[in-house]
Length: 355
Image (tube, rainbow, N blue to C red):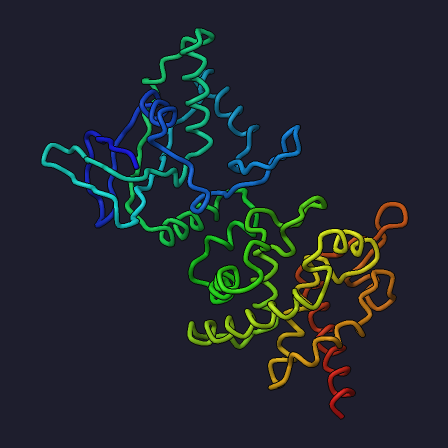
């Protein structure tokens, strides 16, 4: 929580305000911790491993982009543009706009849009304070939009920003509050064993990532491909309850999904522990949903041919990688093909089992 007074503010909406703030003030606000980075409404965090092998979560941003903006500012070639700050509506914040245009704020002030620009300004401020630079940051005047949104609304706003940003599809989907599949995946992240196992920043799972087994974008896409008839929020919530139970059983049943060593080893030759396999898992969930005692039939997964060397996957889903390895063909067509094939294969096994 920070107390701050924004000057010369005009109200432009019920929860929106606008003013102009110079680069010096913005940089000092960042330095003093008045403006903060909230990963829930921005690009998220990533785990950075230290020399002592300890793990720490750090903000996701591009150092290269910060450097480009920094250089552009110092050379006088930077055109100032809109920065958006959000005073988090968490029930504890206090906001009052007086008759003189002073916006008195007591609350958490987050960057909604402008992280790289503010980091560049802060770098210049640090150079000035150390005597390495003598740049007048007050010459840079930024139009600033100030909002008072809760987490969900701020995320949806960032989703809108992301349409013009170069961020991962997983992060963009994570901020989409309206899609039915997105709602389902959010519920799974809260109410199933997928909690803590869904990557919401990257589009893929790095080899050394011991925690995550699937990306947010993959789960959303898989649900949209398999459950095409999903039309209402009520249907989405009902499906989320079933999928929560399904994934709880699945993760417990398949060692590769709860054991990193086995997962890493299996990826050399099998699809079973791959992020891509979730297109298949969601397809299997649809087949089993029709069975009252569906849990009994989960072991049929072990009878599926999920070898990367299998001829049935070659070309459409798998291709030869470097050396003797395999590469997954991950595009819209291959995802649909894989989900459809797994659904047909599993349905055949199920019919044979119950005949």
